[in-house]
Image (cartoon, rainbow, N blue to C red):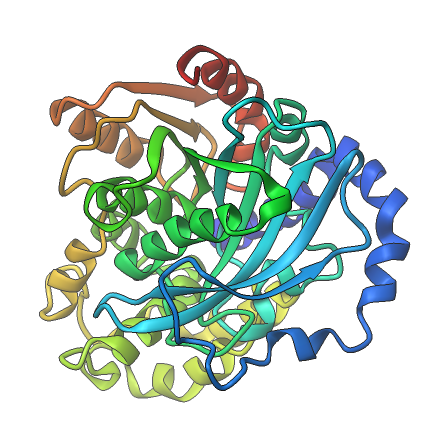
Length: 392
């Protein structure tokens, strides 16, 4: 079995099997989510003034019937900005415990999800269960945290493609916290924990780096990432000739070409790749993994016309969208599975060493047998123990 096929299959299996306790709880509220499906598309339609307002302000708020046990939840539509500073709109979900908030309000965990695709319909908040991909949700709620989970820009509702566009992703993560604070019943404070997996790991790292200038009112108390897509040059180098590279590249090269004027798809993709990439970009990863691999498999070894890690402007764009350009004050937790075939363990080790060299307080947990799909779930005990130590 090709490595790309293997990690994707394991990821799907992890969602269904590793979170066995979560699945049991999901069954208790599946009826509520089913009742909300009719007319759900109307929520994601933007009003004419959707982008008119400050970053983090609420456009729409919709209570969710099928909230997790002992919690209440909302779908949210909120304002944020893209890499050029232009006003855009994002969606997501907000979940808070039913228990009374502590004095000063609840600490907010801003969760950034791993790759689900790039099309609007791939947004986690749009799914039949909008909570199932929030890894560690139960443990976080049990600690009294409010949890807000962005869909990123361009998913859920109209907006520019932002797949692995670090600034746009980081802004969406930070503005999700502002949106949570704008919901009176959430009792959300300015204390923030950033937590993400894979693509989401890149997003929260950018959020941490950008917070002092972009959202100085937020107190970033901790940053955590599982198998982060931190160095895009390393990530792409590891997968130039496998199905993972075709799938990730289909999403990432298309996104970059849509937001960076100098990036032209025909300068990096082969003619055969140019034909099929639009179709791949309409398919969500988890729901369509077999179809994605069927379409992409013939392109393995014939996807790019040159090496994007050495060819401009792609080399510079991959570097610019890699985390680690600047230090931040919050402590950092990184988990890495040693059986991860997508984010290579040695690449994460190198990134950890780089972050430590910047003076960041890094806690690094390597998890034997954890794959890319299972690492965030298996990291939860270590993550929560770490949060109990570092967050007041």
